[in-house]
Amino acid sequence: MTDNIEIIWQGPAALGEGPLWHPAEQALYWVDIDGQYIHRMNYVTSDYTNMKVPAQVGALAVRQKGGLIAGIGNEICFVDMVEGSITTKASTDADLRFNDGKCDRKGRFWIGTMSFDAPTAKLYRYDNSGKLIVMQEDIYISNGLAWSLDNKIFYYTDSTVRKIYDYDFDLESGDITNRRVFVETPEGEGVPDGLTIDSEGYIWSARWEGSKVVRYAPDGRVDREIKLPVLRPTSCMFGGPDLDVLFVTSCSQQLDESSRLPSPAGAVLAIDVGVTGVEEPEFQG
Image 1 (cartoon, one colour):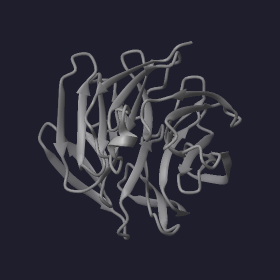
Image 2 (cartoon, helix red, strand yellow):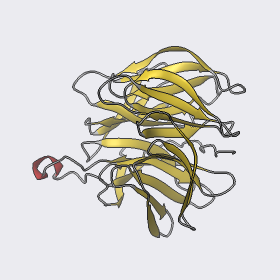
Image 3 (cartoon, helix red, strand yellow):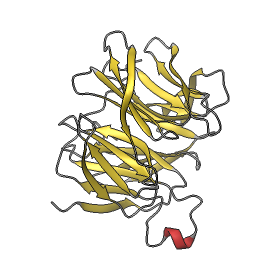
Image 4 (cartoon, rainbow, N blue to C red):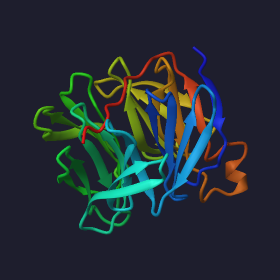
């Protein structure tokens, strides 16, 4: 089939990331990490707004009680874009910023930090009780994460080592065990970045500096690749009224004109991929 790729927001974002579909609002949220913005667009009306935040913002999730939960700098924050308020709820003990994050199906917020120079970053779980717990250490760049449809597997990316891991996952306790390599991307074909899962249990991974998104079967086999008009796609998530649109964010920073053109670097793309996603859980705290 032909994949219809539409630019729904040209931007450009310096480092667009973290697309988040809000079903109740029929709106797409995403962040510009280095621009320090949270963006929001109503998918039906195209009404657009944004909010400047005080530090690099890595990821968002919808709060069941209203607003958003976000990783801003090294802090977990509640964000209300209507009021323009940011409330810090927890912080790490290290000066490493948060990167990608999502909620599991018990409404706990998982988010990791990142380090370019050494494996000193960590993956955290922020519980509904307000407790911030270290779940994995010895990480470089914490990135895309998701849970299998049966809640038995947790997927988690370390971009620097070009690996997506999977773990055994216990939904009730929130524990992860038995880490193994789900996918290791070939050198020279880009780096695995943000990811999402579809309604058939397949993983979609954005390939930074690979100009594509890759769909993996549950056994790690490459099922399909979609070439994109951007060099650095950063993350992807399903949305739209029927969850049948794959939204892809991208990066424009540090790209000169020769490498940017004709790429719409920093734009948000919407793609008809012929499969639906699943609704992302809300943070329950």
